Structures are given as C-alpha cells and as structure tokens.
Image (cartoon, rainbow, N blue to C red; front, side, top):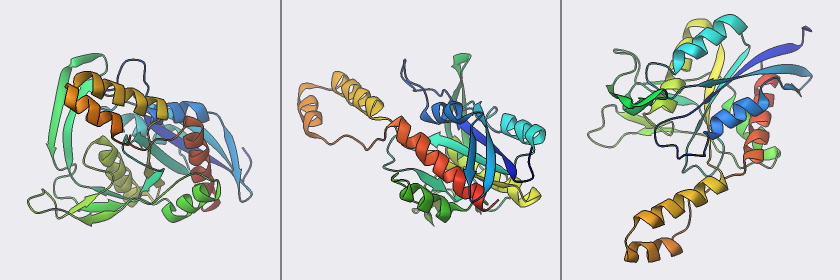
Length: 249
C-alpha cells in the first residue's frame, strides 16, 4: 500500500422486516457495488471495503466494530435507506434513543422491540466526524441531488429534547454508535441516508392500491409518488461522498 492510499469501510444495511420479496436494501446494493473499488480524490487513493450488516438491534454494530478492528480504516461510512428521501443525505447527528421493531433474518417470526436510550446517561445527541458539508458539495458537483441532515428541537412529549433526520431506528443507532466510537478513538466515521429506487417506489404504490378500497384506489391514482433515485446515481453519489472524505482524511 502506498503512503497516499487510505482504507475505507463502507457498511450498508441489508435485509430488514418489511422489505418486499424481490427487493434488496439499496444500502446493501451500494456497499456490494463499491466493494474492492479504488477511488482517487485530491491526490489521495482510497480502497473501499464493502460490508453488509443486519438491521437488528443486537446484530447491527458488532460486525462494524469487528471490521474496524481488522481493517483499521481511515474512513468509515455507513449507509441506510430512507424510502421517503428526495436526495442523498449525510447525517451529522444521531440521538440517544432507540425505538422500533426488528426481526431476525434467519427467523423473521423472532422479533425484538426497543424503546429506550442507546447509551443510558449518554449525551442526548452526538455529531459524527466526517466532512458532511464537503460531502454534500461533492455530490452536487457530480450532479447528484444531496442535502445535509439536521438536528432540531423535538415535539412536546418526546423522550429527548432533540430529534434528528436520522430518526430513532437503526440508522440513527448506527449514527450515534459511530459518533461515540469517534469521540473515543478519533476515527473519522459517520452515516448517510440514500433514497429508494424508482422501481421500488412504483411497486410500493401498486401494493398500496391493491390493498385499498375503491375510493382510496382512485385517490392513489392521482397522488404523487414519493421521490426516488436510480441506483446508478446513488452509487455515483456515494463515490463522490467518499472522495470528499478522502480529500480531508
């Protein structure tokens, strides 16, 4: 490995309960597509190691920690899908709350429910250590729709006084855990949401129509579909985002 070459760990979430048959998490597809790729930005080369991780409370972060211990990466970027996202969205902030239900990929009937802090007594929110603004600019320069995630005050009655666009499910947990790890070790690590694909958005609308009554079906025919993005653009956007990380690594 040359002195200028960096190691990049790209961790994409895989199957989760609710993914329809025949579809694959876009985060997994991107991680697999870029695995083994050597990128160059600002005179710095980076070799990407793709990793697919389960969307489970118990299983999501341990394989990322294990890969970090083995690879000793210079940059860690984790990915998850937001089916309502209109753009690639780096998430600077994670909040200290975990909420939602997961299912074991090997036994979908075995579910786990979480509703509590990720780290009892930990900060309400933590910021990761990637160059998030530079990532957004790099994706926009590449012609890829991108925007920055945000931390905002929570609504009354929420478990925390703040909320973030990473949500409270496992994408948020990954964001928060990576920020904790960065605070302890100085590792440059963070999370980014990606949109859904047009074919997935179309299939979802068909399923909604098939399950709806006659009046609802007619309304759905006129209702705009959620935004989506071609997989090739998501891959290109992720390459651009990693390039921005390499330039500042």
